[in-house]
Image (cartoon, rainbow, N blue to C red):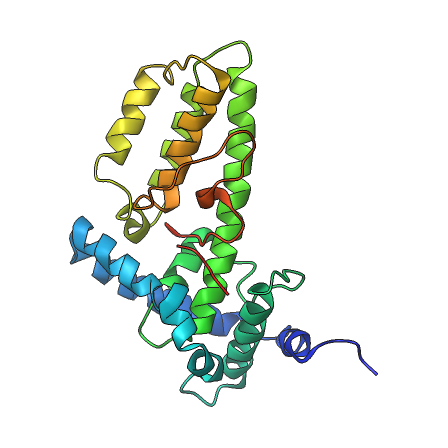
Length: 252
């Protein structure tokens, strides 16, 4: 008798889902995103992003969780139906803290995940978009830990950290427009000022870490005003339950 749970069995059953099916969907999503981004102002795009994330985050999601878990794609394609089941099983496990299994989108890039997260055309179920958000968050958190570690090395014997700010700027500029739109309008300008000033000078190590954390806090949740805590990397915007894309909090 198998020791696997129903959720784990549902995930295992989609190991052979055809990549070409998802590739076609991503291509269509990219075309829709391009039209959306070209015809929407930055401010409107930021507002749109926050509303789209409400579909699969927080109270709005939890209030309709039963409906989301029962949602199926409007198709007879067995691959898409299997992937939807996989996504629901995955997010239900992940919401309990169980990250032992892979999501159906685990091998996608940040840009590809964003196409799914912000696509409300019906091509993806709400739980598929939520699963993509978990994956994007994992990528983001890994980058944040790495960039903080690099900044510590850079600042050894030197209070300035221009490379850190250059890395953050590069990261910001690599994001899709709908994610950039969730940052303050002058975010890039402020980073450029920091770089030109050699990374700025703080009086103490804690002051320097606070400044770095404050920059990272704005990377994905620019509208969030909760502050960082020192020492360590534990802060609201760096905790494991933070969603990607400028990637909101994934709550169970």
